[in-house]
Length: 112
Length: 400
Image 1 (cartoon, chains in turn red, brown):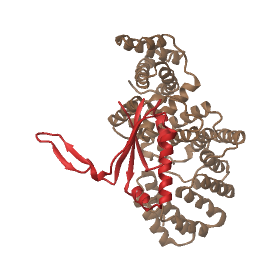
Image 2 (cartoon, helix red, strand yellow):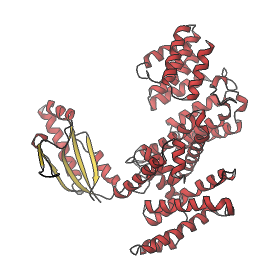
Image 3 (tube, each protein chain N blue to C red):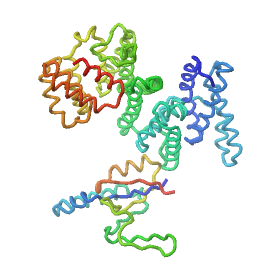
Image 4 (cartoon, one colour):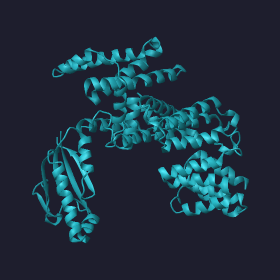
């Protein structure tokens, strides 16, 4: 069963990361690296997304598609990256997501 | 179907066997949703036919046969289910583990609390969507939708049908206990006007707690919750006066309490506590209720013991509401001033909680501060939506 773990950043988290000293920041990145290494056998694909100010949204509705600057929902929480995992069931996906060491929200969605 | 006294008996028999049947069908078919539909079908057939034909000698076998036949009909129409067909032909009774797996799946944390409750009542207790809707005073379509959505999520998100692994078990057991406790509270605290419907939920909660305690004999909190529910129920007859008005503990006629039930529940609690030596919030709450239940009179209550138990409870599960209850015990040990000081500290956290103001009113009244007491009662009255509490506060204000 494949799931996508979507990592959601909050403004508060971004500010906290910003405010960290260099060593602390390195430790935070190392924790993320370790997490990917720990679950490497389950992670089939993953990527980090460029910051939200680079987003462009297209709404191909009636007539001309509408193109706007920015994400589809303006919010204080944004998806900053994702990892696709191949595991037995939701409990295993939950276990991996619980150990995620960085941003404070992870949404789990089965890949249909 | 007309209502008759045997309805209760039927409901009990159905509840006892529907969960068992669901458990065995889910493990046979590996398909939660299909199994659940078969059970509901069999239960509905039973509720239609048993009042006419009488309850069969072996209700579980009867239900299983009906579900199996129906399952075979459905499967025959679909050609790619040969393996499952073969499994359905070899009926097996539900093992202990099957029922536990069923309960844990219904109470999986990936489902909303409302869905956990609806699914547990439906699948484990065999209640219909209409019965669940009546108990919670919500539209039947809401309940049906919750159940459908939950079953879809179990299938599509692959929520596993199994007993959680050792390291997850404590948290997951808590999830299950919380669902049962919520059911009990919903039934127990409902106002008098809704009592006729609410009583069902207390029944279901007790049944579920007994089932869990039976299936998990090494989990003292399951026994604790069962004891807690039984101790509350044992005093049920004294909680309302003949006009259906709520009677406070201090004013209850203790001769109406079921002494035998109190003794049994206390013994159950003591056994669990001694065997496992792992105190938890449900055991402690039950122990507090046991202290009240064992007292010959309100004045003869062992308040010092209750205070110790509240301190332990606060240590394990800190909550402002528990602190409020502890303050009531404190009053009887150290006097109203000490309790009042506690309440002042709690004022911020529980400003919108009617019981805080009602308790404050009582303490102020006992200190002769009548005007402040009156204002506190009025504040409590404004905050409560429960008709039984409302009536009680109004009576108190009228005496002033």
